[in-house]
Amino acid sequence: MFPIVHHVFFWLKNPDSITDRDQLIEGIKTLKQIETVQELQVGIVADTERRTVIDHSWSVSELMFFNDLEGQALYQDHPLHLAFIQKCGHLWEKVLVYDIKNI
Amino acid sequence: MFPIVHHVFFWLKNPDSITDRDQLIEGIKTLKQIETVQELQVGIVADTERRTVIDHSWSVSELMFFNDLEGQALYQDHPLHLAFIQKCGHLWEKVLVYDIKNI
Figure 1 (cartoon, each protein chain N blue to C red):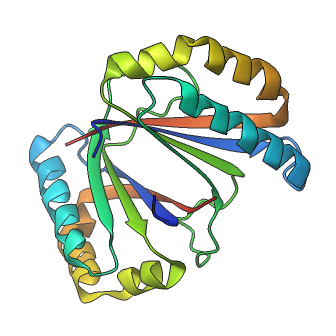
Figure 2: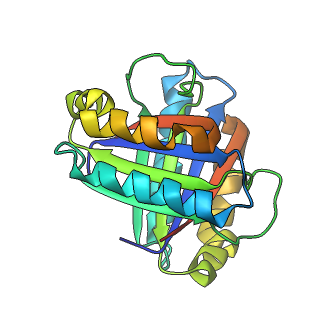
């Protein structure tokens, strides 16, 4: 288990476009090359039951694990991350981030 | 990497109560005994920079991994999960769930 979890959800501008979704997914996968990213999991909405507490409205999930906050901060400013935002930023309408410290 | 991710965020009724927080955390940890829960990570808000896209307003994160949707469904109805809700449900004001299918 890694100490720091960084979970990002993306809402696409064109949520019905598989092309846009796949382009975003490919972009996210390039972030694994950043040396402080210990593990990367990319996902889409799972087909679980519809309950009011479950948010099924997003399109792509980026789940990352870091060894420490410094590694997460380095990731934010890393050229590969900035290149990803430049290349894929037009694809999403909204992004929501949760940063977690495991205990 | 497990195929299904179930990520739950809890907002406490008394967000400043460490006692309530720790009781919830202990309750969540009992869920690891459910046989379909492959991995469980429990966390609190990480002290990352304040940006508008980051939600720092929750109190406890429950990150679970399953082998399949059936395992996740079994978890929902498991006696240990129901006992957890009965014992700890009064502690939270809001719960938000993301169910992810890794690709």
